[in-house]
Image 1: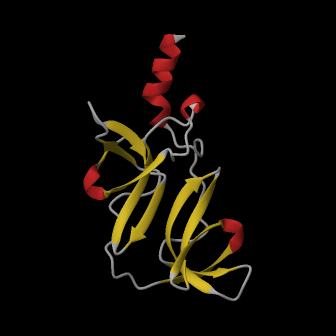
Image 2: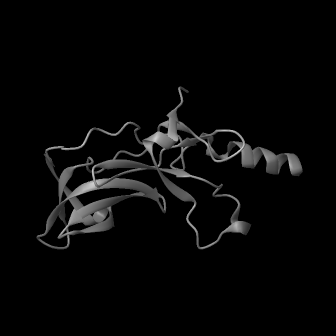
Image 3: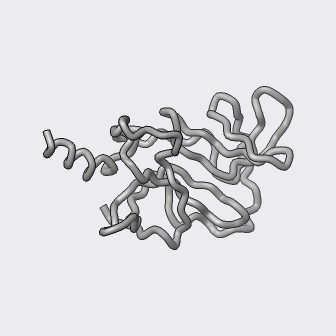
Length: 151
């Protein structure tokens, strides 16, 4: 039993939470979107895998809304980028230094905040439910905290 726990703790991050094939995005980052419940538009500034679906961060009316695909419609127009493209992409494998030795994680979210890119990775196993707290399993890190890994 102990070997199974050690194996779970050491390799839970080796595949994405979406399974084998990463689901495609409904809109690109920096793409103009329309909110399906109103005539309001905004643009996508980020995306994160959450509750078995992509959740999109939409800048709209001076605030950021976090919406699932069913609540937005892509306009196929990408905002003129004043920020460099992200260093890492969704589903990419990176090394993160959480402690004694660097650990591999999969990028599960990308977010642009004040012209800087942040990347979401899990910092603890989703299978260890006995330590479920109010804390998120996801941590957002800058590109300087990550190292790209060739798989």
